[in-house]
Amino acid sequence: MGRLNSGADLENLRKEILSRRDPNKLCVTVCSGTGCQAYASEKVADSFATELEKRGLREQVELRRTGCHGFCERGPIVVVFPEEICYLRIKPEDVPEVVSTTLVGGKLVENLLYVQEDGQKITHENGIPFYKNQTRMVFGNNRFIDPQNINDYIALGGYFALAKVLSEMSPTQVIETVKTAHLRGRGGAGFPTGIKWETTRNARGDVKYVIVNADEGDPGAYMDRSLLEGNPHSVLEGLVIGAYAIGSHQGYVYVRQEYPLATENVSIALNQMREYGLLEENILGSGFDFDVAIQRGAGAFVSGESSALMNAIEGKVGEPRPKYVRTAISGIKGRPSNLNNVETWANVPLIISKGADWFASIGTEGSKGTKIFSIVGKVNNTGLVEVPMGMTLREILYNIGGGIRQGKKFKAVQTGGPSGGFIPETLLDLAVDFDELTAHGSMMGSGGMIVMDEDTCIVDVAKYFLDFLADESCGKCIPCREGIWQMLKILNRICQGEGSEGDIELLEELGETAQDCSLCALGQTAPNPVLSSIKYFRSEYEAHIREKCCPARVCKALIAYSIDPEKCEACMSCLKNCPVGAIKGRKDVVHVIDQEKCTKCGVCFEICPPRFRAVTKSSGREVPSPAEVGGQA
Ligand SMILES: Cc1cc2nc3c(=O)[nH]c(=O)nc-3n(C[C@H](O)[C@H](O)[C@H](O)COP(=O)(O)O)c2cc1C
Ligand code: FES
Image 1 (cartoon, protein in one colour):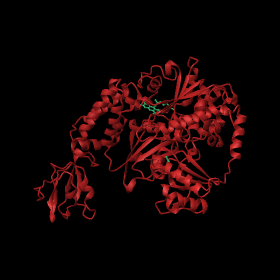
Image 2 (cartoon, helix red, strand yellow):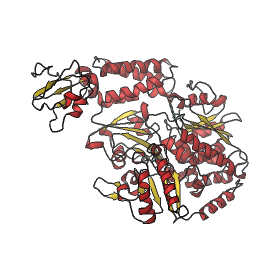
Image 3 (cartoon, protein in one colour):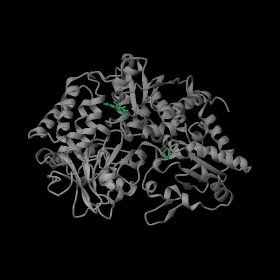
């Protein structure tokens, strides 16, 4: 079928697509998201193609490359439909067995299934605890859809929300629906989407722009990439609906430079939309015209900020400007421009199809719907999770994340990306939504969650984030450029064991000044990691400054390795492996570390046989000299 001239044409196309598909037909889906591709999922898909060909099964079995399922660390992920048998960490060499045992023999390949802690094997994706406790409204279709095939999206009801909007609703009704749903922007600040749309709609001027923000510069965050790669039409459908509501005829998808697959899939999606008459002139015969261009990111974290991003689209340096007048009123080329995050746009078709009341029934008083988080760090299950707003941190990190690795103790979770804050163990039962996180010194940000265990030094991690932000500051305003830099210098001193009384207070003062006086939200939020870590872990700062002790034994300048003469069996392992020859001793003579020579690489600590455990790592206490322990150094 070619161009669609009405909602009825879309309905007919969907019927035609479904009539060609047998729901009982065997279908092998191979995740082709960037995460699984890093584990060679393309080779797995190619192996399936070859094996099916070899066995003459190409007609009986469909092979489909899909978007990211979220559980990337267990990739490549393969699901066999209609039974939805889920195989994890599958390798190309496993493929012949899957074909013969599952596709031909109808039996399971047990060693590719998910294994629970109690040893029980789980056959279906939805039975795996990581998935079982999620509500995947926005992200859920990724696993069914070939993102390069618009028909897969239409088969699941895609573009019906757009057809409804264009044929049954006025722009004002669309805006009212989004306002009633209380959708808040998923890109950081949680600004009410309907109000922003209304501002741009009501702003003066005939030419208006709508933009998808897919810059996603937070380290460790990749939910926008996975959505754009895995289900680009859901974002684009939201964008066209927004354009209609706002009165815009030109849109942009601003994609981070480092996202080639997302760019490719969006580009293919746009071409397919044009073929079906879902873009350009007279969309679905409604008289509404709209087109979209792709803009590659300017390669800096700060370019994700609204005014910086719009400067970059204009071809200028991607730096922010003072926003006395908001971009919703004066954005690209001084024209009203509405910017929303990838996930925000993807929520729009759901709200139109299922209704504002349905959407508003999910979540908390002030934050409706779901949120996709990327959980990384010291949890057992890392990946992308989508949960209703209001789920507690404990539920997210333990029921879905599977708890802390190696049975260690939870210390903190950093939410909101580099400019978010630390949440300590005492707040694990905090209901996660925009307002609660902000009230406790952190923020939702775009949804990054970095989990830390007892072996993490909070001062060191705060320094890491500040280092990132100091590097990314555009340098245009003094509170951000100089303030963050001075804070970083103080943190470096503290971690070097050169902190002094008054440093904590100075950090607080500098942080508050940067928060109050910086030009854009980068500088205004950059102090969050430091201020929240002082708030919840002040004693750890004090230990570094007063006792020259790093309680987690991470800061190199504050730790020392030593060998317990009572436990050392003079086995020579550490002595032979020390890269700088700092360990003295002989066979049958206990070993000693020369502290002057030691570079604190930790090899001796790692290599000392567990049955001896003679090497200790300490901080804040004197290490005995070789003479004191009677060694040979
Ligand atoms: C330094 C900085 C970087 C940002 N990066 C992003 C980003 O990568 N993606 C994003 O959606 N929003 C980002 N934002 C937030 C945007 O300025 C803007 O608020 C958001 O795109 C609006 O969309 P929303 O209302 O749907 O959340 C960033 C803000 C700042 C200050
Ligand atoms: S890329 Fe395959 S699960 Fe994320």
